[in-house]
Image (tube, rainbow over all chains, first blue to last red; front, side, top):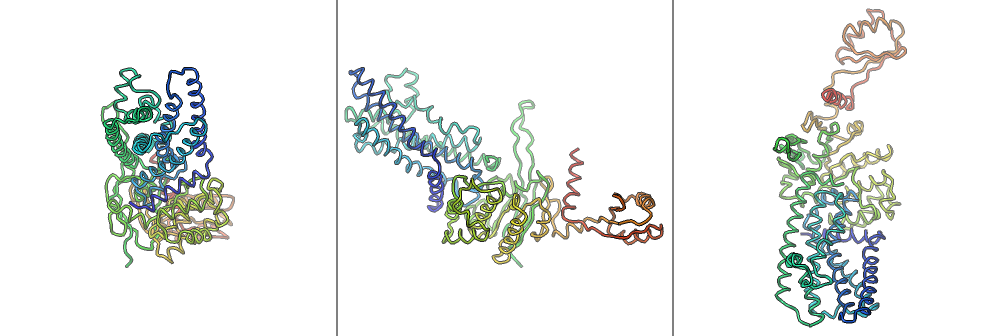
Length: 261
Length: 321
């Protein structure tokens, strides 16, 4: 694996980011709109129903941390689509770049852009609503790592379909991750869900992360068994989705990568 | 003797056509490349020609690893491509008029990305030099989307030379270029061959260009190698030539005489064009004198590579009908 080639892919997408207004909109405008909308809504609910404790913190913390999942997932699918839209797939993979190097590069890009977007979102909720999402403390580190890895596995799953079937299913790059959202307990506890949704949520590693986060915020206690369960589920899903992407990449080469352009 | 830089042995590509629910069987695959073998020597420019659908682009894509082969062996510099993909591609590059570079990036940014992908030393200097050679220096800071088709092709050519390749795979590199730029590109390619011993595999629909640039030509037809020779060797395999006569007297007699011997004749005003075997020309002219057919001008058009190409393209069309 070559560091130089990984950096080359990162530079390619950073140059793209520099020139594309729509990428800036995705990185800052949409998170800002979400924060404003949900922030104002939660303030309204807090004033209306005073018996719901910390509603602003619950909603905004969930929203900000969901951006980690969304951002890391988005970087994989959309960066692959960028190559397809530019008719650059053959040029790229006719170079010494390997598919694993490309995968590492888009993961690192996900981290980089996530830091940018999340830094912006953290500041926004703090200055607008006085919510400090960092109050989770040092547990923020495993939480963010798990959220990031969950974004990756969904991203590679979606990218696997895109590399095989091309841009005709490109909408998955934006929408795929939302399929998981209802089962991830981002804004509500798993116990409040219908039984069948709870059964699905038990297999969704994100549900443990968001539940854990709320638990730390309100009680200061984190169930380590749940954190561990989320960890191994995420690990298994991530491995499986990476293998899936590599298999689909090979399948696509059977037809010819040029057919994607 | 110069060494082999690219060796292709029994290369085959079949495209699966999926499953037939009617017969409940897998459909018979389409054979795009059928057991072809060839070699490219160091410093050699080899043309890969054939009509549309012959398998030229599929072959090039397999040589790049962007399309997987069904069977066969590809070796660069004596090493198997499958096992040494990264090492091989470090010394190979590719250009096609039909691919693009990321449109939002500037020319310079695009080339810098590829210079980094190929780990080129002093990338800034290399990019500057190549942009000058392809007369693209003024466009370095322009976004790729703002380039004309010809300018974009030149940037792709710069990309193809960025890593000092030892083997270049060129898929119609001069399509969409103005004649003067295409001529400059051809000159540049020949200079690279001479100076750095670069080997090239070259597809083009411009037969004049192929005859001018290629040392050897491989003709593909329906996925198989149909002929392999020097451009001159291939044209010499066509035995017919065109004999043009500006007639003075005896036009009717010429028509009767030519048709009696099954020669194809076209008449336009007083000019007659006769398709005839080269070896029969002298005898034919003697007979004209015997029949009192006089002419004031004569020219013999020898077959070109284009005639060779057209001769079997016509056959394919007939078979298609």
